[in-house]
Length: 285
Image (cartoon, helix red, strand yellow):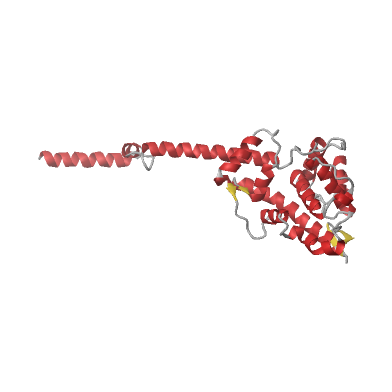
């Protein structure tokens, strides 16, 4: 069985499972970029961004505080997953019950677990060694599920489309080298700003060193600081709101006493004074 993947003016031929994997990884990459902007504007984490935050390196200033806050301050986390949402799709994929894993579930029997291409399993091997910290040997020891987990982790950290070792390696050589892969990887991200940011993360935090297991585990991803700062700011704003509420409660249920209200409304104050004077005159007569 074969299929075509077409994007950005280029077409490649792959098997059905790989085509579906690439399509869904592209959806996830673009959806994640929009998703981060949405949660940033709304000031609340969704389930997917909360998951990314949980894996952020403690070396990022404020990361530990943000992770603790996200774990206990429920009003900063929106766990609602809309139909077809990025968060719902990805979390489901990790549980093996989602469209991202559909190629694996549908094709495993036909391909005996070797559903994708060599490039995808190379990425999984790199993930196991550099992120998990375990040397699994060659690509024969990487499973289809490992491919999904690896692709998600690198996309989360780099913010651009990653479908295998080739796209990951190209980032070491700069934006032009990565974007030139569009001929053989039509879904590569072509936004120069996002690609530049990905290259900087790859070059700084993911060195080409195959001697130290787990040496990429604490890489500071392109979205990490955004989420950390958002949560800490949201917590600070929440604390400020709570302080205002406490002050209002100490002054009464509305936070404004009758005297304060009158002094803040001079016309009403004058009318009250006039009424009082008229009443006094009537009483004295």
